[in-house]
Image 1 (cartoon, rainbow, N blue to C red):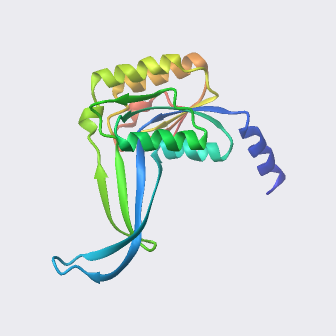
Image 2: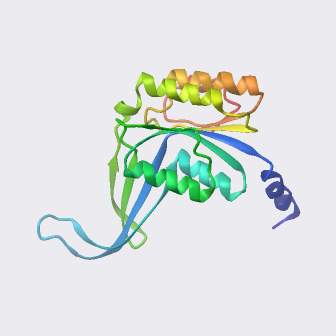
Image 3: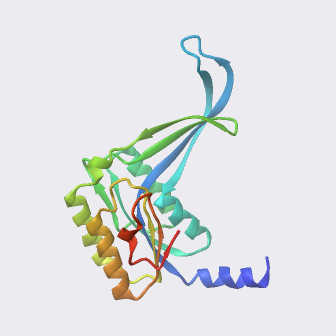
Length: 202
C-alpha cells in the first residue's frame, strides 16, 4: 500500500460510524446445473452448499468494519430465524447491535440467490415492507436514535423497505445537526428532497 493509504487506514481506526437503514440477510444456494427439468423449461440446480451474510445497510456496516471503523447499526428486523442470523453475523463482525429493533410482526428481509457456479439463475425474496412501515416501528427507531452516543459520521442506507419513514429521516437530520457530524446517504429511487439535510448523496 501507499503511504497515503496507510495513513487513511490508520485514521479509520479512530472513527465511529452510525449506520441507519434497511438491513437484510443475503443468502446464497450454491450448486451446479447438469440438466433441464422435465416439468418445465427451467434448469435443475443440484445444491451443494449454502452461505449467508449481511445485506443492505448491514453490508455497509460490515464493509466499514473491514476498515476497523467502530460501527453502531440502527435498523428494524424481525424475531424470526433470519433476524437471528443477522444478529449473529453482526456480533461476529464486531458490529454493535444495541440499537437493532426487533418486531414480532416483522418479516426480516431475506434474499436468497440460486447460483450455478458464478452465474445467478434465480432469486427468491422474503419481505413485507408494509409491516415494517408502521408508526410504532418508526417511533421505536426515533427513540433508539435518541439513545445513540455521538458518532463521527452517519451513513444512511435506504432500500425503500419501509424502515426510513419520513419522520425517521427528519429525526436523523435533526440529530446529525445537533451532533455537528456529516451524513452520507445512499438513497432509494425517488425525490431526493427527503434527504435535504444530507452532506453527501450517492
